[in-house]
Structure formats: C-alpha cells, structure tokens
Image 1 (cartoon, one colour):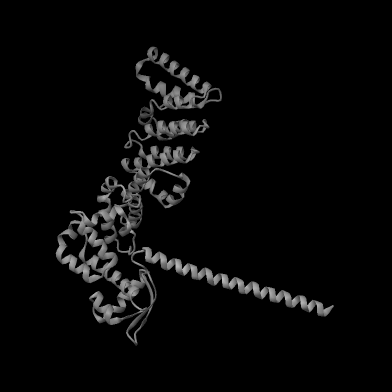
Image 2 (image 1 turned 180 degrees about the horizontal axis):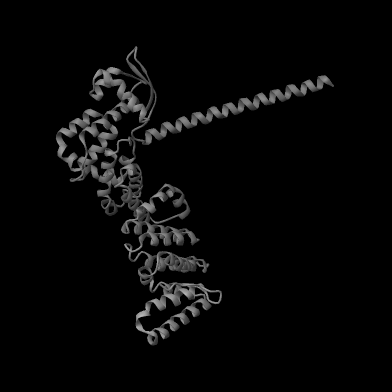
Length: 411
C-alpha cells in the first residue's frame, strides 16, 4: 500500500492532498487521474499561499472515508495528524472552530470502522486546540463516537476529570450541558461498578432544569424516574438532592409517575413502616422497575436508623431500633455495625444500658435546614478561631512588654 511521505521540498498538507487524490482517482487510469490530481494539488497550493486554512481543511478531508477504509491504522493517524495541525495555523477563534467542525464531521462519519483510531484522532485534535469551546465541541463528538463505535472504555477514564474539564471549557450552553451529562450517565448506567457515577451525572443533568420552563421539564420526566430508581437500587447511596429538583418535583402530581415520586419521598424522609405499606399496595410497580423487595428493606432499615439518629437526643434505645427496623433483639447491634460500616453514623453501643450513643450522623437530605445548621457551625468555628488568635496576640504583646521591661532593668 502506497503511503504519504512528506519531504522537505513539499508542504506536508500538500503531500496529504496529493496522496488522497491519487487514492481517490486510482481506478480511473493515468489519463484521467493525473489531471485531477494536479488540479487538486494546485488548489491546495493556492490555499496554503493565501492562508485559507478552512478551505484547505475541507479539501484535505474530502476523501477521508477512503483513507479510513484503505489505509493502515498507523498511516491514518499520520495523515490526520497533519490535517488536525491546521487548527494551529489560524489565530482566529471562529476559524479554528470551523476547521474543527469540518475535521470532526469526517472523523465521526462512520463510527463502526476503525472506531478506536477515530477516537484517538479526536483526542489529538482536542490537544491542539486553543479555544475552550472548540475543545468542548471535540470532546462531545468523541463522547458520541465512543457510544456509536462501542469503544466507550477508552473515554470513561476521562470522566474523573470532568470538573476540571468544565472549568477549562468555561461557559457552555444549558442544552449542551444536558447532552454532555446525559450521555456520560448513559455510558455508565450499564456498568454496575459505576452506578454511583451514573447517578451523579444523571443528577447533574436534572439539575439543569428550572421550574420556569414547563416544556423543557416534561422532556426530563423519564430521566427523573430513572434517577429515582437508580437511587433506590443503589445499596451504598443514602443521600441525594433529587427532592429539591423541579425536574423530579413535577412527578409528584403526574398521573403516570406520582407513585415513583412517593417512593423517593419514603426513602428520603420516612421509615421502614411507610415502605412496607407502600409495597403492600404497589408490589407490581416495584417489580416493573426491577426493584428487589428484600434489597429495599435492607436499605430502608439503614435509612430508618439514620432517621432515629437525627430525630433523637443522641441516645437511641435498643428497643426503639428493634421496633423501628422490625428485627429481633439479637440483631440490633448487627444493624448498628452495618450503619457504622456504611458511614451513616458514628456512635458507641452501651450494652449495659441498652442504648446507642450517637456522636454524628449523615443527613438523608441536605436542604435549607441543613445549610442553616452548617452556616451556624461555621460561624461558631470562625468565632472560636478569632478568639484564639486574639488570645495569642494578647499574650505576645504581654510577653514583648515583659522582655522590654527586663531590658530596662538590666541597663
């Protein structure tokens, strides 16, 4: 297979145009092919001389699919390295974005052919870009390519850096944020080990909807239901902000999904008794969402124990735990240990007096009350720190004064 080999006498971009043109016209015969190749090379030379980088990019990617299908992966990467480098030629952010769009459109055109190579090309393009929005645009295209080309495993590691990426990309539109967060959540949802991350990005998606835009809210209903179901299913997630979100709140009076909203409210604000009553009346609904009754009971017992820790005076009688969790006397300490292991409560068990002494607990919801409590604690902490600093400064002044007085005595 012939490949492109740029020489010192020829611009690399021109070498790519020549190679792609010869490949495209290879079956036409020399008499037809040579004039066409010469014509395209002349166009490329004119674009290079005039600094028309967008037009040159469009010319260079004309036969992109032919390159992907007939050239080795190594050579495809080499060719697109030269093509992608065009984004560094312009100092105009708008032109950079347009060149980026032209290249990306060709790279993602056939996602099932050499998808890993296509993804690598987009990553290389991303690293060459200067403007934040262009980088975001390429990342979003890479994300969709990874889904359609079934190579998501190559992009999943980047999700851990998403907060840093978002800061780097700056201000991006709400619609684009939604596409980003929902696509990431969809990628992660089928991987049980990543259920927590899937729910995190789904929650970010739902948080972009406000209560003022009813038409937009309605499009988030299915995802709101999915978020509730994922939260209920997750054995290690005991706190969320879903109840405060308009996208979720709309379900409360929805004819189809009101019961799902009620289930979320039970898991976040009520105890095991309420869940058991709900299950008795709606067992078919729970099964339709693949919710396992025994697993729900386990989670609700832990949530109920947190509820006892937050509602009491810091001491929870064993008997109250037994009755609330509907367990036997000899199971009380086992469930307390489970709650400690899940980092839901910090406590000591007083076996002599049959009470659990709670020093700290996790809040099931973090609403206005929790924020006010935190604000009060921070204000108290700041006041204490200020007092300590004042005391240290006062002692230092006293000490300096004493040393000065001693110096006068010595003289």
